[in-house]
Amino acid sequence: MSKILKITGLGKTYSSGQKELTVLQDISFEVEKGQSFSIVGPSGSGKTTLLGLCAGLDDPNTGSVELCGQDLSLLDQDQKAQLRNKEVGFIFQNFQLLPTLTALENVSVPLELQGDQSATQKSITLLEKVGLGERADHYPTQLSGGEQQRVALARAFANAPSILFADEPTGNLDEETGEKVIQLLFELNKEAGTTLVIISHDLELARRTQQILRLKGGQILTNERTKVQ
Ligand code: ADP
Image (cartoon, rainbow, N blue to C red; front, side, top):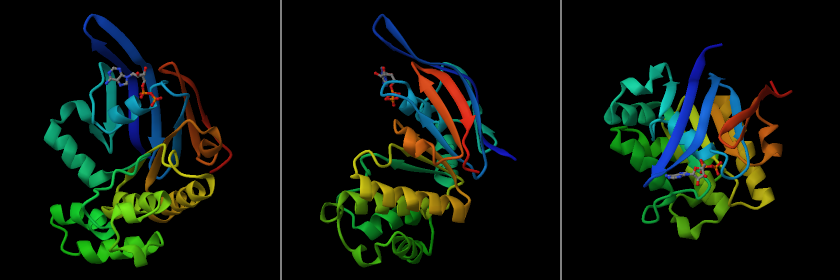
């Protein structure tokens, strides 16, 4: 199995004034291509910081991150952004749709910016896939939380990413709506072979992925495969 993400000896310390806060220490793990993987831990355990480091949004103090075969420490900011545009998708707890754009535009504009000639058609197909074909012309405020998250999902999958990071994807949704989003996320993971990395405090959700990395106080507690394979 080839590795899509390889984290070695990662450490992160934030400093404000004279104070230093070590939020991640000696983190090493690997994610296989196509795998569903979760990072769980209580609030403040370093999950979001780790996600930022994995995606090259922030730099570690120690250790290295290899994403899609590239050592991020050897890339400048532009190269990292290019790698993200090409290979990485994101889903956040608060959806992060652009409020002045319709559902369709939220999905298609990033594609158009990358020069994709078939951006609109691709986006319509994706919105239909997430069950929102009829809502393409709606603005985010005209959509429910679950619908907004499904638009975010369509957007995240629009450039066929190799790896998708989902940070508490159901955090703002009720149980039933969250379940629909999760099912869709796993469906897209299986169909498109997109590697899925879910960050969550929800162990039940994590148990539905193939591997669980548990963090506590910025350190790895366990890293185990589940029965799901
Ligand atoms: P989690 O996602 O598990 O809730 P975070 O990665 O958000 O954890 O935070 C881990 C720790 O790092 C927390 O104590 C948080 O207050 C601290 N932290 C996060 N971001 C910053 C920052 N930019 N500056 C200083 N401390 C931070």
